[in-house]
Every structure is written in structure tokens, then in C-alpha cells.
Length: 234
Length: 268
Image 1 (cartoon, rainbow over the protein chains, first blue to last red):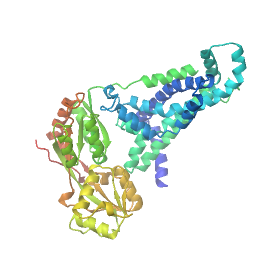
Image 2: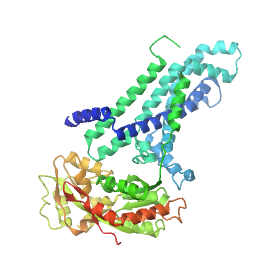
Image 3: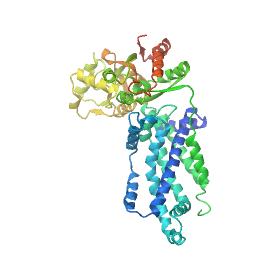
Image 4: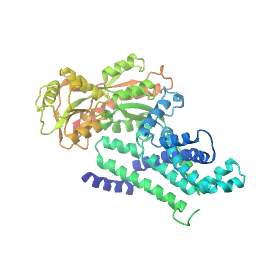
């Protein structure tokens, strides 16, 4: 109980005094997570629309696989990315291991199935509604996908936020591929793991509260920007 | 709106951190990092050499793996057997001893196994085994873990035959100390990690001082013949710094609660 309370007060002071180290790792957390989110959304959303519109032989297995991959264990993803990016691995020459880029790569792999699955669900519902209209207008496959993505944008925002939530709280994979290097790849979650290891529970909790606060702020910010709860449907 | 979000995200993703001076990577053991000495040495290195040393804090086993794979430029570890194998495999150019500290046996203040007045580390471990008192082992192939295993075998005991009181947690020094604190058990720790540990609970330092608990840290640059990309010249200038009088002064002068932690013993 004492740790919890001193964690809260410490978190308060860290934020109020804009502790330079805290700001640095919080910004890196955001940089890595938002970077991964942008890349993952750019892959997952067109993929979801494609799966809704296009009929092909392995469509159902692909969707089932995508759903199953939502449960991909991050630590295994981290390990695979590590082995591939290691200097003695196939992409070792790129020298990406222990850089923020490696962390983005791992997170993209973790959140693409999640975003694609949620996005596919809502785009499919919308497709049932739009099917006859779009067919009668004789639009191309590409135009169908564009229309669906644009008109499902609110649901896609939810999909993206789910991806954001999974990525920002992730520690197993980015610890392995980032290495938790001070001033280079240390982010909030890996810093929490480190402080816990030192037995400094108060500071670890303080960082945890900051992480939760950050996630809430970003979510509220996006909702406010997107006016989700206003103007009915856009 | 979505486009604006997209651009904002992309600009954050692209924004890279400008770095001045040279950068090299060194794998160090958790016990070294937990001691807090790195926070004294790294700024001094930055100042003297304009060299940013990025630390990967891992167990000795993983540190050696990182060196073998060429993912770091040098390693600073404390397990002579593993270091020699590393050199035999041609992964490192040479081994340079830098400093030492010592291991200590931590346990519950009440000391149910009665090790506090024992004459040797082997005797202390035999007492713990005889009392079947809870014992936490690192179990992660680290230098500390290897030391612990060698101590058990020199005490004439086989870890494989131990019962439920022996807990191999497979974690770093801090996490293992947390576990020991939680179950109020015995554990072998390096002195530095113990002094810096914040969650001592009911634990206390019970046994120290046997010369076999001596813990030698050595610096091994990764061989550029195996991995042409490693920054060997930076690794060498770091070695020169680590064995200099300036480093000697900082290492010998580093204390926690008035206790000296490390003794500089590099051949200059």
C-alpha cells in the first residue's frame, strides 16, 4: 500500500516538474508506438477492405488465420525479429537490431492482425449494406475498397485505437529487439521492468501511472479530434 | 482529419535523434549495471573520449551470445570459464581484467539455517541444504548463476537432486532478489546489487568474506576478423580508458552507504 501511494506522488512530481528523462522515454514510447500504428494501419486497413470485397479460394482460411494471429505471443515475435535482425541473421547487414526501427517492426507484426481483424469485421458489415448499390454503379474493385474504408472510418478509428493500446503497453518483444538501452531504445514499459528489477517499486509504479495517463490522453485526443460522440454519423 | 493524424504520426516516426560523437555498444551484466557504477563511468567516458557507450544489460550468458553474433562491440562480464571459451572460439581479440567485487549470501534475518558464523562459503551452502531452507537461484546461465553452481559442487552437493526448497527463477539479479524477498529465502548475490536493492524486506547480508566469492570483471573486445562491422578502434580506446588512472580513481572511489564496492585491479 505504501508503495502504491508513494508511486502516485512520485508520478505526480515527475509529470509536474517535466522530468527530462521521463519526457525522453515517454516521447520515445509515443514515437515507436505511433510509428508502428501508422505503418500497421496502412497495411491492415486495405487488407481488411480487400478481404471484404474480393472473393477468392482461400478467403476464409486467411480470415481465420488473421483472427488467430491476434493472439500472437509478443515475446515470440520479438525473438523471431531478433534472430532475423541480428548481425549473424539474414538481415544482419542492415544493422537494425537494438534501434527504435527494430521495435517498430516487431510492433507492426504484433498489431497488424488485430487491426485487420477488427477492421474487417466492420467493413464486412458495411459491405452488406452497400453491396447492391456499389454493384449497380459498376465501380471498380479499387473504388469499392476506397468507399468502404472512407465510410467505415469511425469503426476503423476504433480498430486503430485497439492497435495503439496493444502496442503502447507491450514489453516482451521490444525488450528483446530494443535491448532497453538508456537514451537509445528505453521506453516506458521497459523502464518499468528495469525499475521493478531494481526493487524500486515506487518509481516503477510512477512510470506505470504515467503510461496509463499517456494512453488515456492519446485516446481522448483522438476522440476529440474525430468528434466521435458528436454530429451523429460522419 | 485522418490525413492530419497520419501526417502527425509519420512526422513523429521519422523524427530521429541527432547524435554527436561516436557511439559503441557494450553488453554488460545485470550485476554491474545494478551497482550504479555505470552512471558514474559513462558520463566520464562521454566527457573524456566524446564516446557514447550504449549498454545492453543482460546476463553473462546472453552477453557472450551478443558478442558471438557481433551485435555488440565489446563485453564486460564476470565468468572466466565462459570468457575463455569465447576467446577460444575466436570471437574476442583478448581479455583484460578490470576490477573485482565480491559475492555475498543473503538470507532472512532470523537465519534458520544458521550460516552467519560459518567458516566458509561451502559450509554455509551445506547448512542451507541441510536445513532445506528456501533458496532462490538465478537459473539464467549468468555469471552469478555459474558461480552459485560451482559453489554447490565445491560443497559436494548436486543441484539436480534438490527438492522444492531450491527455486531456480530464471531471472536477473534484481528480479531474483525480489523473489527471495517475497519468499524470505536465501540467495547468492553480488554485493553491489544487494546494496542498491530497494525491496530488502526481511532480508539481511548473512555471509561474506570467503576468497572463493571473489568476482572478477573482465573486458573483451569483439574480434573484427569475425565481424568486420564492429567498432574495434572505439572498443580499444574504451579499454585504454577503463584501465587508466582516471577510471581507477572513479572505480575505487565509488561507494554506496559508505561501503566500497569495486576494487580496480587492471594491469596498467
